Length: 372
Image (cartoon, rainbow, N blue to C red; front, side, top):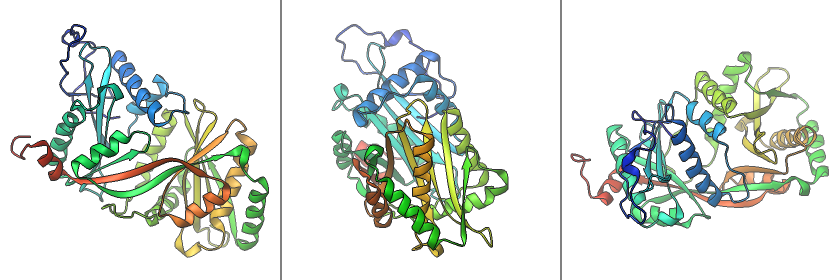
């Protein structure tokens, strides 16, 4: 998922090798903002193959949604993507992407991803995709590379171990089946929360954030910096109002709808916490639970449970087609896991965030700073 300065032309004659040829295409840059219709379709097909392996219960992402997402990457996120085509030009068999965040913090790192179709693994394609990644990291003076793997694609873990990467954070995607949700639990949390939070009020933003609350919303997002990071070598992330708007526009372009519920002091209007959920009509049975956070000064009052219970009650009433709710949690986030487990969330997919020094990957490739 990315863009770079070079567009991949559509179906060039040199991709058409004879059947049985073992010749592998070189790594090519792929500009997601200006690619041809055929190349968009090829990348979408490739990513859906990879997605099906990781999330076998889920439908594929439509070409329209994928293209809208690629063409509406926020401006502060510079994404580069590379692909390797099948020797006979019949499709993409491997791809890699890297995101450089133009922020005031975390200027030492790049987030990346590499994927290879199962039938083409162990042929050195992933290693080939590391070359432009390291070149980019060195050019940007980014010393650390960060990526994630999951239990359904063990090749990813094996690859990171070969690079000598270290685990930074262990996490799970947890899933709640709404058919198993205890409705009485929601009612208890709402009743208890209202009693303990008598000086607070709940509010909802359906869709775009209102302009008059935008600076307060920026501060709400800051509280996510209190989440556990385990051994990840990352700093706090600070988003501006304009950057939040860009992220918002990316969601809207893809057809993703967001509900944001907040809780604030009645007397002062001071925001105490919030929770967000995301839904897309292309996957009506799925809802994604995003951030849930309460400022440290307001914790241990049941506000987190009140927010989540009230939001889930709204989902039950207004999104009856939703069958499953998914959310991501660090395994070390005991406070949030306690709430989620009480609601009935269960482990769905084990994941791991890895980190490795750029120089270490360069050494693995056997190339020096002067030649890459």
